[in-house]
Structures are given as C-alpha cells and as structure tokens.
Image (cartoon, rainbow, N blue to C red; front, side, top):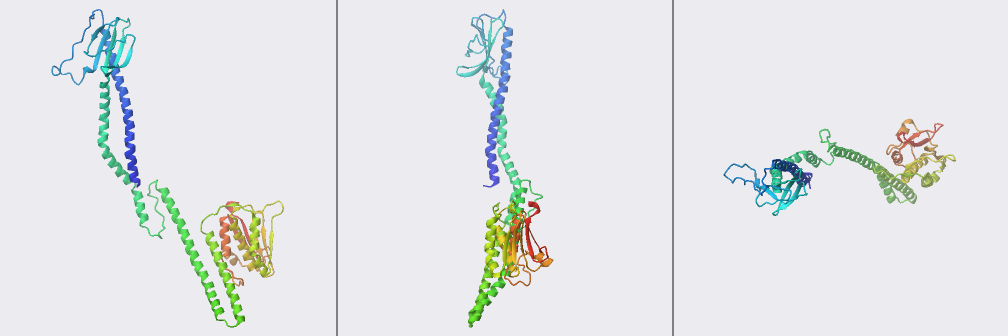
Length: 450
C-alpha cells in the first residue's frame, strides 16, 4: 500500500474517532451549561412564586389559568406544557397546580433539585421550603426540553462538518499528493538512472524528511563507486599479471611436450613445476588481497601473538631452509607483554607470513632474517643489499618488485600487508638497518590508535 493511501486511510479512521470524542465532550459540556441555565430559571421561578404567597392566598386548591390556545395570541416559540408549578401548605394540602394531569409529588422533607418520573416521562423538579415552614413550592420542567436544546445545538455544529467532509477529504488528498510529490520525483529519478550513474543526488532543495534518505543514498553511491573502482582495478591488474605467467606456462608446456632429450625434458619439467608454483602463489595472494579489500570488517578479539608467530615461521621455514636463511624471533624483555592489540588472528598470521616470506625470499643466501616483537612495534629485517629511497617508497605498491630479483614473486605480498595493517590501525613503514644495509619493515600503531 502506498504512503498516500495509508495517510488517507489513517485520516478516514482517525477523523471520525476524533470527531466522536469531540462530539461527546461537546454534548457533555452543552448539557452542563443548559442544566445550569434552566436550573437557575427553576430556582428563580420558585422564589418568585414563594414571594407572592401571603395571607390573601386562597386556602382551597386552585389552578392557574390555562395557556392561550393556538391562534388566540402569539405565544412565540415557548412550550409552557413542559413546565409545572405546585404549592402545598404545612399539612400537605395541594393549594395550587398549574398543570392539569401533571401531579408533582409532595416532598415535605426535601429541598433542592430532584429527578423523577411523572406519567412515565422524566422531569427535573426544584423544591423550596418557606422560612416558617408554612409553604412548600415546587417548580418542575421536562428533561426533554433540555435534551432537545442540547441536541439541537450539537446538530447545528455537526451537520456542516459532515457536509464539508467530502470537500475536506478531497483537499487533504490533494495536499498529501503534493506533499509526497518529492518522493515520486525521487522514484522517477532513480528508475530512470543507468546502472553506472553513481552521481550524488541533490539535497539542497529536498524536504527535511527526505534529506536523511538522500544522504544515505549518496553515501551508498560513494561506497559502490569505490567498490567498483577497486574491483575494476583489481581485475585489470590481475589480468595484466596473469597474462605473462600463463604465457610462460604454455611455452614451458610446449617445450616439455616436444622435448625428446631426457635431460632437456627434465629441465623443462622443473621449470614448468616452478611456474605452476609461482602461479599458485600468485592466485593465492590475489584471493587474499581480494578478501582483505572486500570492505567487510572481521570480528576483532584480543590477539595472542605466540600461535600467530609459530604459524608464520612454520609457513616460511621450508623456503628459509632451501635458501640457507637463519630465521630468528625476538620477544620483549621479561615482564613486558608483546604489542597489545585487538584484531583478527588469521589476518595477522597472513601479515607476518608475507613479511617473513619477502624478507627470506630477497635476503642473500646464507644470511639471517629477524622477527622482533616489542611492546609497541613489530619489526622484520633482513641483511640484503640496501635499497634506494625511491625503491623504499614504492615497496608495498601492487605488483611492484625491485629490479634484479632472482626469486619469483608477484608483488602482491606487501600490498596485502599494508591493507591488513590499515584494518588494524597500524602504520607500515620501510627503512634501512642501523648500519645502512638491508631492509627493515616496521609496524606500529597509527596516530589515531596510540
């Protein structure tokens, strides 16, 4: 159901309810005011009658003259048949009654108002005792007269509203339609947009209620645009990087297939096996990079560095043994804990493994690689040749590898390290060792997490 229909439905349901409550309150208040008015008239009438009583008042039961018949005189809009007056003496004898057939009850011990039924019709009577107890005067009125006045006043208020209800609903429907027109225009704008159009929506002229929605949509467009840019860049880089290894593998396979000399065939098979390993490592690292850059934030817990370091060193041990590299790990001094950190242990293991793998892979054979975990930093250093400032600045870029490297690689390992470090609030820097040789990778908390 549309918002417009919902609002109209709410209006159709709520308006009668509100009017019903207002009608009830109006009738109650009008009834109270009418009762006050007519009660005051009954009191005034009873007092006026009592003021006329005296020694000359007849002792026998009398009846006031009847009201003129219709046509004899203009009696206006009054209906005196709805009023009655009675007078009793001290002994309870009825001395005067102005309504034939209407017998007010004698209540010698009652003074004030009372509601009673006379001939099956409700009346409201006022009894007034004289100061000496000689006379009892009663003035009464049918409650129908009061109710008629109350309902007449109420109907005169309600009928115009009921007659204007269709006009009100039409005006409200038009107002709701105009109020919701920005939503309709926004819907049309989004429906007519191409899938690749991620320009932000204008918020300056939008209603205040729509600005949070437009802001959220613009934020979503920005995130989608960043994701698309990242995916396009990753796809282009992956296609570029995979093209050469695939061509090399095809060439090596052709050599293996056409080689007739066993020695040449063995060499070609070794090269093919090395190329397959390099391709597997490249695909693994590209998948890891894709997961890291997917934008999903993993659940972070307190990090225990011991199993992470053991896993990373174990993964790099075979390469270190093949190249004769001595792997060493230094922990903080006794009494000091390694870097406290909240993070994802799996991603941190990937980070350390890539750092150690690069350090071992590009260190001179027979040298050492040291992993140093302090209370506020993590360092990985090797004893390779010093790199220039330009090379150090480019380390960590995708698919970048310094010239002259003998070991195979894809140039993605340090990109993965940098991205994982950013997710954990760590700065990733390179620099030479204290003596100017080798390369040292340093991880420390960034300014926002110190």
